[in-house]
Image (cartoon, rainbow, N blue to C red; front, side, top):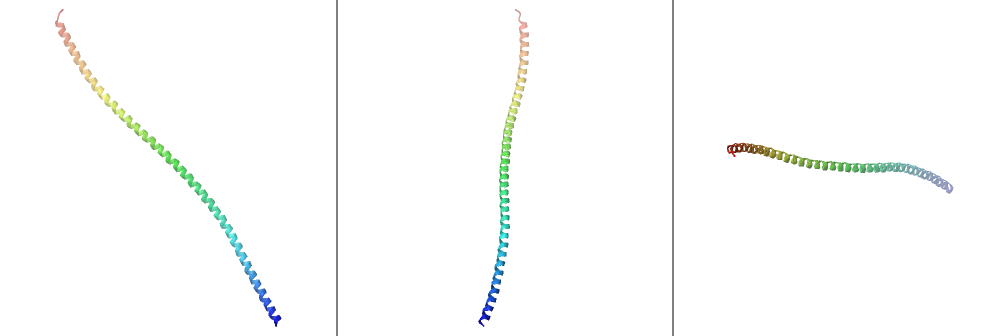
Length: 134
């Protein structure tokens, strides 16, 4: 009877050992699947990091280009301001020349009128002098 008990205990031990071995194999398979999944995840994370780095570099280039465009626009605006100031100055100078031309034209009219008066006076003096005989 003891031998029978030992044999049954040995059978249960064998069965338990097989079950434990099966469980260990299942855990090992699950661990291998988990390692493979982690490897794939690491590769995807590395790809994501690479894409994020490229995106960051692209954003920096866009920012630099935008800064350059702003500088160019500011230079154009400054040039336009200078041109407007030059145009205003030129307009003022043209107005001054026009006023001076008008003043000169009036002076010419006045001079012509005075010259005509002088001519008349000279004619009158000549006539008066003609009356005197020397």
